[in-house]
Length: 75
Image 1 (cartoon, helix red, strand yellow):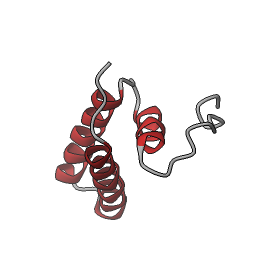
Image 2: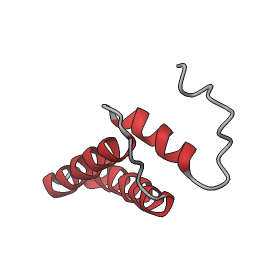
Image 3: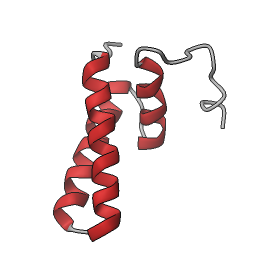
C-alpha cells in the first residue's frame, strides 16, 4: 500500500485537530464538513477505516515516532 509523505500526514493531522477544536467551539456546519473531509483523506492516506485509527497510523509515520510502541493500536 502506498503511504502519504510524512509532511502531508503531519499537515492533515494538524488540520483535523484544528477543525475538531473549531467545530467543538462553534459547531458550524462548514467546520464539521471540512473536518469530515480531512478525516476521510486521513483514512484513505493511512489505509484505515475510522479517524482514531487514522490518527494513530499517521502519528506513527511521523519522524521521531516510536514505531516499536504499538500499545495504542491494540486498544
